[in-house]
Amino acid sequence: MINLVHIINGPNLNLLGTRQPEIYGNTTLNDVEARCSNLAKNFSLNLKFSQSNHEGEIVDTIQNANGLVAGIIINPGAFSHTSVAILDALNVFEGVVLEVHISNIHRREEFRHKSYVSLRADGVICGFGVRGYEIAVEHMNELLQ
Image (cartoon, rainbow, N blue to C red):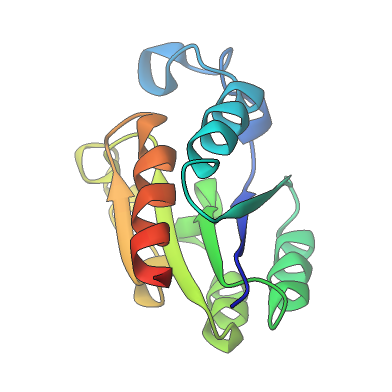
């Protein structure tokens, strides 16, 4: 069994900890990665992390993951609401897909209520802050058992 899970972060998530802390908190992306890595040690999961502000790079990352990773945890950021290309790439991916949003997208601006990625995701976690990533790692572990 492949035990590698790729956590993919979209645009502006490299600014976690400084960008709109009233919405996203003070935890940095490096902190999130460390917390997830520590949690994954309790399971038989290996994690790979990436972040990009470029839609095509995220599409390439998803395409390159097929057959090499068991699952993808993705926070596509603003691309959630605009990118059919990311949805199309995820639709070709043969593993488990979990979507994470730090904020509750359903309590924000109306344009954020619709996520194209949700059409492919096996689960969606939103509104739990950066703890949502850890919830996703825990749930991914359960799904891959």
